[in-house]
Image 1: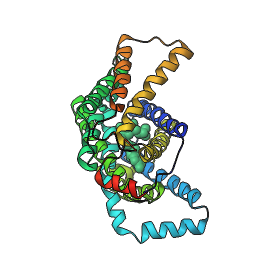
Image 2: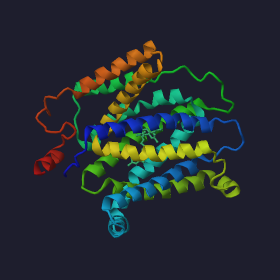
Image 3: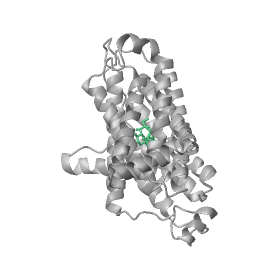
Image 4: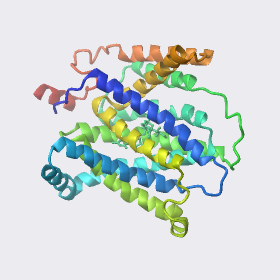
Amino acid sequence: MAHEPVSVVFKIYCLSVMTLVAATYIVALRYTRTIPSGDLYFSTTAVCLTEVIKLILSLGMLAKETGSPSRLKSSVMEHVFRSPQELVKLSVPSVVYAIQNNMAFLALSNLDAAVYQVTYQLKIPCTALCTVLMLNRSLSKLQWFSVFMLCGGVTLVQWKPAEATKVQIEQNPFLGFVAIGIAVLCSGFAGVYFEKVLKSSDTSLWVRNIQMYISGITVTLAAVYITDGGGVQEKGFFFGYTPWVCFVVFLASVGGLYTSVVVKYTDNIMKGFSAAAAIVLSTVASVILFGLQITTTFASGATLVCVSIYLYGLPKQATSKLPCPNIDSTEARQKLIVV
Ligand code: NCC
């Protein structure tokens, strides 16, 4: 499978946007779930609407890629309507992502955004484990060490004192932590599964996204019906939608698409490392530009992040002869040789 060449600048751009969107998304989502008003929106509808928007945007990107309406039509006919097997294949990550995205709402309805951010970093070792198990990749002991070091580093970098103002909604922190646990497992598994499907053929990223979002819409619509069916029938799908809720849906859609681009051009472990680097760099930029005060916790976390990135990037003895450090399964190596 030939890899489309993209510039490093483009990769850095995608990673930075993804990280910025993710940080804003978590804070904005938490805000919309803690407003003490009786008009709280149904979170399942927001997850469902996000899938619809991502499908529309992916169709737009595929239209751009194919270059003409007739080629777009034949591509959709071939890959969607005449490929039920592929749709079934992509329904696996879409179901898992649907669970994960709903868990994020549940967790952020019960926990402070900073606590969520920090605990969610457990996804880094979980993703590494899924990568080893599902992509037959191997990590050296040093790389495993650096993965855990990164996890600790990002935790410290994002460490903030708990919310000063007490929110006026009922919260169940235990439920919040259980939801994060499920989200962590789902993120690792679905991310690596999608990466495996994407990189095992030449099928376009946008086609893969369209295949995934079609079942995503079905699954998340079922979740609306099962969880909030009565309420939605009574009050309407868009009940409680404020401009902030629309902003959250917008961020979720854009963030999801950027995530898919990042996974295409790097991989899920690199996504974790790069996101950490982007957080550190953006804080350093805030220090230079806005005179932000750096705390000792941040400085120690940033050091751990930088050292872990360095250690992870050190060449492994067993794979140092490979032309691409991200590809080390026998199958992938053979493909690379063919190319
Ligand atoms: O948890 P995370 O990502 O792995 O979740 C991936 C998100 O991307 C969407 N996705 C994935 C692949 C694909 N082809 N299309 C997609 O739309 C999934 O539906 C899922 O929402 C991260 O690495 O920390 C990251 O975190 C999320 C988000 O902050 C957390 O999941 C919140 O719990 C970010 N998403 C957004 O900012 C909207 C993601 O960019 C990075």
